[in-house]
Image (cartoon, rainbow, N blue to C red; front, side):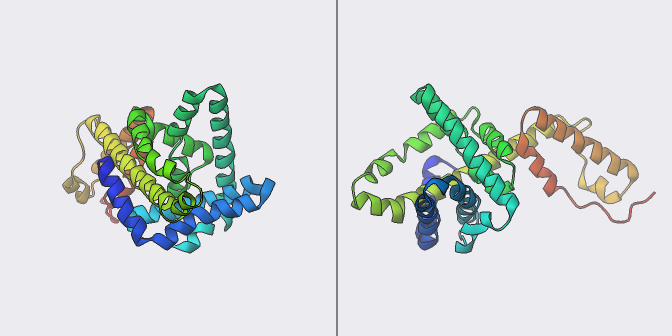
Length: 257
């Protein structure tokens, strides 16, 4: 998808899910701010849920309000969200201290970390590393994507009118666009990793006919080739190549000895 098609689709989805989008984009931040010095702990809890809402809107066209509080439902999700919030905030703070450019680079590099955690239930460090991989060699593209929202953000700085517009449209629209963009980059990464792995298969990719035959040799060959493909993908930091393992054909239940 092109940047324009991503933004067009996001605008349509945000209108269709206006109430959910407004609640997910604004309410967690307001509630976290009201907690005062406990704000980071509240932000960590909301991180998982609010991103899950926009992921569902971007992928399924519908998000559930109750998912906003998903990060508070168990200790694992809350801890991961809190750690990611703290670590990313420290990274961005250090980058800003170094100068404006390093701060911008770090922001773009870790732009998708929260979405990745909500999508794949990763640890904080895994989410940051996967975001770094997704944006690798795409920093200019990601920067242009973010820059395209600058007029909206400037408009949102207008007192009262801009604040209202930010709450009811700009932030839901931006968050939905970001989730849609994330899925686009992730799908591209999966296809790239799969293609690279398949090119490296020793002896070629096993056919479905050989698998259906259920022979031990075919099963062993398939396992060896898949392990080899995954190893190559990981060596190239193609983390999302591992997702293709979830799509492999089901193996016959009764194998011939």
